[in-house]
Length: 108
Image 1 (cartoon, helix red, strand yellow):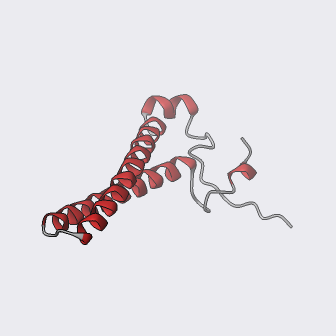
Image 2 (cartoon, one colour; image 1 turned 180 degrees about the vertical axis):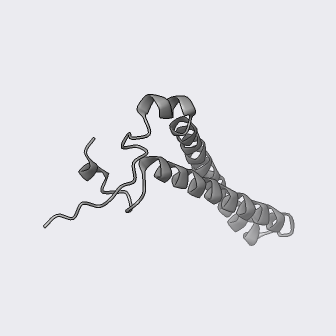
């Protein structure tokens, strides 16, 4: 893999660090939606009528988001664990582009 193909990385970032950051982002998003779900469920217990249907719709939307962010968090967590496993690091070598800090190559 050539460094030019890693142009999606920020300067001084490695693929391994990007995976770690994505895992943290998806985990935090999942937690955010858990809190939101808890608030909606509390509101749902305290209401009735038209507002109840709107809250049920919001709850369904939040549940869908929880499913998506839960899966993404789990996948990124697995990838992060694999990339940072001692055996993988030894096999790929710390000089692998996966662990190498990316530096943007400026083209004229």
